[in-house]
View 1: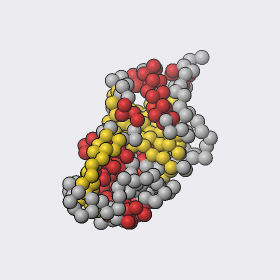
View 2: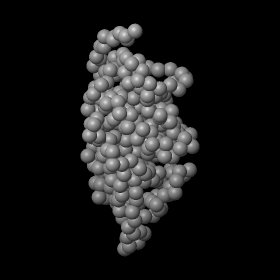
View 3: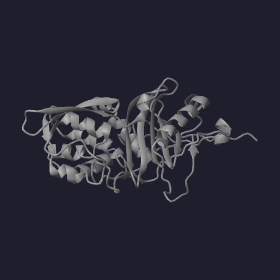
View 4: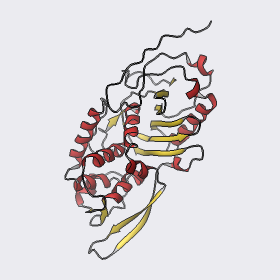
Length: 317
């Protein structure tokens, strides 16, 4: 029996962050649209958005609230860049408070007493995910990490991100939470900032540390934690990785493809370090195989209310 189409009603969006123009409609059942196959995605919370067409191409528990780890740094960069009128060439001395704010995270190359430019600190935060960088940047802007977290939450509300909360900028706090949908919308806003986007798209960068005494400098190279920058299938516009024991492995990445244009992908809660990157490749191959963008049958509104206690499920659109 042939499936009947439902009439789709487009809804206008009312918040600035939802500029992707996502609309609401009911799709044909997955089997009718693409057959039985679907991407073998391992991450428990996923969303894939077509930024060019303003449509959700794939989602899995995308409105489930979860800790987001260092994906927080992406939005911290947005707030600092937007609100802190500071010279990116100015130097900031790393303080004991910066070290304390990063306690419990990975080892840092931003040593107490060393001075770094604001630009270098932004690179350290977004590329290497150094947990001392944003406490230092907050300090340079006259804020504590907690105050920066409050500003981040306020800006999230202004952008219509109702489920996003930041306790501080590093992501070490389990109280930094969001959803895959809302992180994807954050990612889109951040990559609109040219100097932030350029940092996130770099594979490597040379840091310059000004050592105590002011007469010596030390240069060292940092590398981006986003392994997709090495991909030959697509170019990476920008992205951020994240991990804590509670959040597990997370990834937010925007890619530019020949077949599908610009895509925003967010994957949260993966158990393996490489799983999130493999999931992106599996989703890309699935989109390529099924020509999803051209043949899309239905779309969903990104902030559609769902029961976060519902069991895990796939929603392939």
